[in-house]
Length: 155
Image 1 (cartoon, helix red, strand yellow):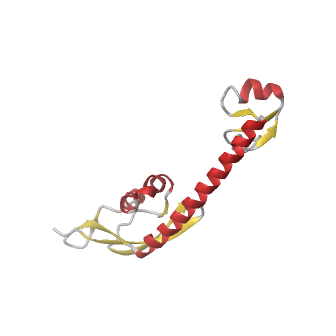
Image 2 (cartoon, one colour):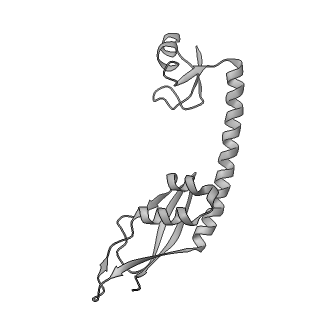
Image 3 (cartoon, one colour):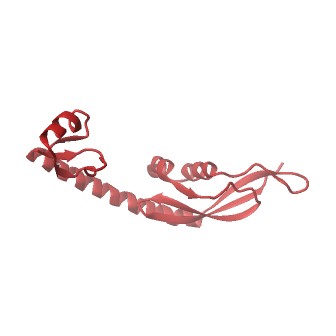
């Protein structure tokens, strides 16, 4: 039986693949669990239209991410840290702090995507006053470096 896979299934195929599967496995396991559907002519045409739509959205998203890279590389994100009288730093800047700041400062149409897909390359939290270059991955193969500046909290 020919089926359209609706989710990635290890050992069988990836989402939207059309595969030939034994009837019993398809009818008794894959289809009832919503993992696949029968590959009729109309379902196949619908799948092709959906693939084209997803591909188009993917290209639009990638172009938006590339413009975001340019915007992020020109910006400087400033964080304030408490500093003691002897210069000791209290607190730190974490991946989540950076992610939240970037997400809040970008344009609204990418806000949800960036919050869920932004990957920050930071070995340990920042605890030093000064400028830091942090590599980030926005997904879809788009990477950049952002400038993080930490300064003493003014009282």
